[in-house]
Image (tube, rainbow, N blue to C red):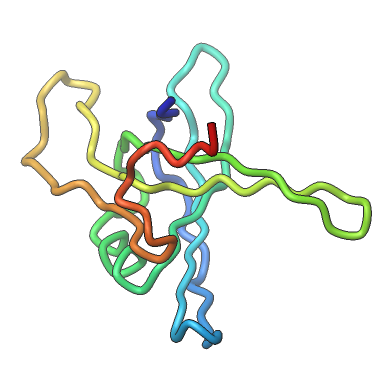
Length: 120
């Protein structure tokens, strides 16, 4: 099952980076506002050195179509939810025109190819 959100990019947060046992990592969080009757703001992220670099092409104000995975995990009896974008592309603008094609962006940090990664 693929989940998608269409929304306007309203904020790019600073890139976070570090080094782990698997090497260098980068993460960037960003906020989009959905295009619904009652718009909602959603904070999500991209992971991976390449994915963060690819995300730099988008600017605040761009209308985006974002494919996401949602995962929650427990830490010290509290639950934390992560919304990770694994494909981002420009969406159709309000005028109905389709912008020039932008290649899909797949997060390579998790090692998946964007395929359904559900365990069942």
